Amino acid sequence: MPAIIEAVELRKTYRVGKIEVPALRSISFFVEKGEFVSVVGPSGSGKSTLFYLLGGLTQPDSGHVIIDGDDFAKLSDSERTRMRKRKIGFVFQKFNLLPTLDAKSNIDIALDIAGSNGTRDAAYFDKIVGLLGIAKRLHHRPSELSGGEQQRVALARALINKPAIVLADEPTGNLDSKNSEIVLKMLRQSNQDLGQTVLMITHNPEAASYGDRIIHMRDGEMVAPEQDPQWTGH
Image 1 (cartoon, rainbow, N blue to C red):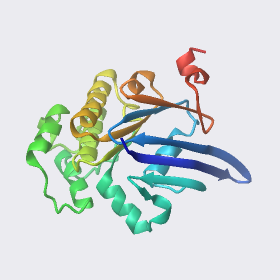
Image 2 (image 1 turned 180 degrees about the vertical axis):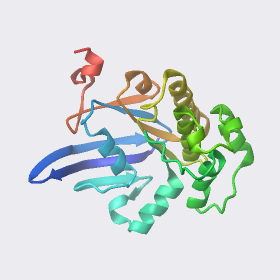
Image 3 (image 1 turned 90 degrees about the vertical axis):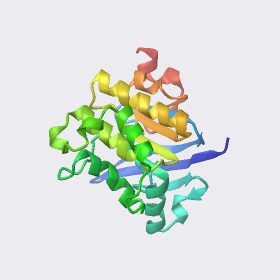
Image 4 (image 1 turned 180 degrees about the horizontal axis):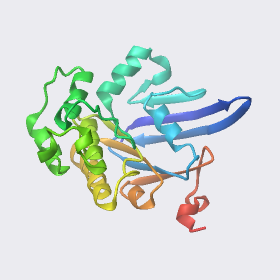
């Protein structure tokens, strides 16, 4: 299978005053089309920085992110934005729902942003909200939804355009075990049924096990599993 995500020698350093804090140290890997890859590591390992670089939400100091054959570094700002809208669905730990809109409108807004003129596959919409258990909550605003329901709405929003890639940053980080299972099963199903490529950032070994492959990170670098304390038990 061809690679749909390629990271080539990615480096990113943040500056706090006069202090430089390396977040990524020459990270390289690829994800094949249709894979479900989990990226794990402790806090400060560089996972979230990697997420933002792969989604084109920030730029590396050096290196390349290649999405479906297109190098972000060679695209204009508008071209990068267009790619994100059409090819990538984002799921964040913070739900990022618009407080003045109900759940249905929060999902549909993804269609407008992608330039779909509000048209959607009604059967697919009904399937997603049914599987996520939010069909009866569509006319409630975020303040009227539980945290788990808000994350499920956010996941539906990420999937509604049937993106080729789903990037999820700690999607179960604020959820209880029941809601975590619903979200993870939906990600797995979108991967298996629609062939969507899923890259999920997580610190949770149980969540990571839903992936076909696990990438371990520590101190801004990829490491072998035995160097990850969560897996060795040290």
